[in-house]
Image 1: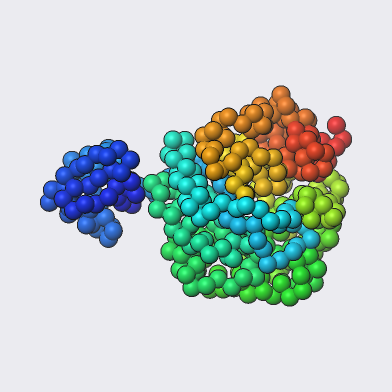
Image 2 (image 1 turned 180 degrees about the horizontal axis):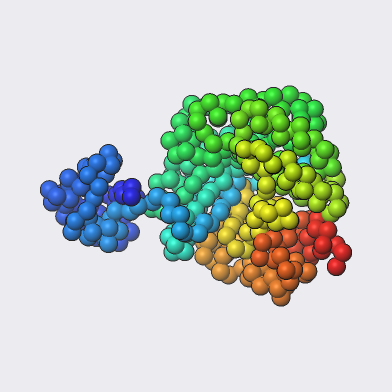
Length: 391
């Protein structure tokens, strides 16, 4: 256990004050010794004083608990990017973004939500390009200062060299880093701009060199589907341990790109499963439809995830642009329990066509973002599923 003083508590020397309740607690010599040992991890806390401080909420243990569920938040910290990718879901139009102070309040509200839900958290900091955001390290530090376990991830295109400050922050909190690569050098640069493949590879190598866990994200579309085997070889060669595949969602600039047909999509999934054999690199996606090759592909929308875009809008998923509320004045509780849309998603057998009553609903559920992008109806069948298209 890694107990520390709650962030709601101020150490006044002879007293501790809970800033939320106003309660004052006198600190005797035993309590002072206990507090002084917390940062070093020496002499694990125990005894009546420790039990009292823990019960009163003065001491907290924000370490991960393997038996607890996880809630996933994707937080878009800005709406600016240094690239203009062909398949992006966002036009990056000028918008009134959340201020830094409002983003801190979002993190406070998220921590309160996790504590009441008795869940651990994950936050994916993204954008736009999050490494362009001046306060990224401060946001990560603040998220990790909360009285509940939160694992930070940074989702980046890898072309912006990280400065010393952000690298030290990521190392300090053992943050995960995901970098987008969409094919071989020629295809990736066709999608994301000339020279950007090499910049992204250099970014991967930089993060790996300081001991960070780096995964790669690959968006599958007609333009790059045949490049997957060569791409996998390249990722293995530089030491990537995991690739996260997802299907193109044709919204924003990405609407100009071609999706695979359902039969082509299944063929790609099955071929990736074959490429997984005998390899240490992890390739099987946790997206819908990947249950067909033994992976867990359940769509988390409505069950354990929310997105907040740079404008502060709560969304079920960033590629499912349906506003559920505004983070400037709506709490996670109000959105999670008050949204009619999310409630209908949870009653999928009643509202979600075909996918909701499919025998594989508990391990798949279909992609609601794809359904919305193609048909305008988030409750329509997943248009990338061969089974749904035949029914």
